[in-house]
Image (cartoon, rainbow, N blue to C red):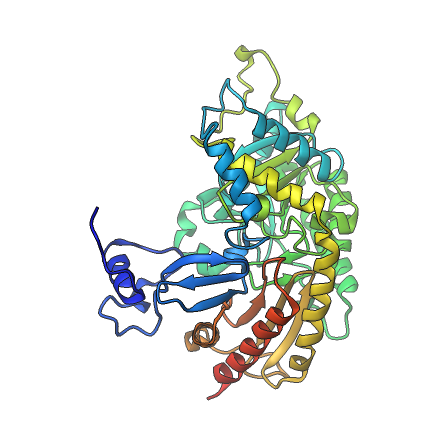
Length: 459
């Protein structure tokens, strides 16, 4: 075995020689070492903390891209993974099955909103969206409605990077370059409370936006397969938040106009919004629910699409009818991932996770109150264990900083220097910590963020 130097500098040099990182302009890192953004080699995780090769510690304020619920190297989940690895690591999931996949499906059906009785596995969030889009279109085709080929998405939405998922996304940063390759959705105005009219409540904004969605459906329902939304929080679009009444109205409109309701709970599911699933806060069941990220506690890639028996039955026919859903992934239903997902869900059963989250969320809310009057903060918003701070150049007119200023990057770099992983979305600084974070650790995150914001908005 080749022996290499293993400090931060040595590992970063080796990394930059060959690797190409996601969502990154690699020039920022600069292989000569003169770039302004360090490449941070992580060698170990402990609870809410990450430790780099030089021994520096970083409090993971974003749950490592919103995946890690119960801490890094969680011993309970790790033990389940190790046990499963000695039994069965993988098997083809066409014509074969295994108990972890069966038990996980049973548990997902039990805990998700009523009526979601069928489970289709994939291996990441974008793949789950692809499955739901294809399944919705294919359902209508099997029902004799081949004219339904379009989708409705919300402005500011984000559903993933594969071409289908990107097609129903509306964040120009990700979509613009690939627009010639994409489907074109109908866009319904987001119920985002931040974009409400002056003096308008979040619920009033929702009512107005539902009226606009109704008008869109009146024109296009005959050619529409489904409406797809991120329930309560549009995450990658800037942590935009809206009232649950929108989901109630959306469910009613989808029923009225005979289109599917796809709930993308990939980021907001599994306790992140204060309930196990965001749709619960509106008392609705979608036709498709897409899950990933926290499903495995941040250990392994896995996603699941839950749907109804009536949709399943539209594909159930003699082989010769040609109605089967042939979408597949090599690692569909991977036993290792299913086993760690089961252990993750067992933690929710065995421990008062949601109750503790509510206490942590309340503490985070109280700590952020002081930022509401900041001259460069236009909004402080929160839904459960997601909180966001909107930085602006001018508070009165909500005039944003130019994107080229990269003010959010200044917050990120300040965080790294002071032991916190904060990765803003443009000029939106947000918090989405693991559920095992302590109140003292929340205090640290907020203190570092506030100091970082002061540096970021300075001329």
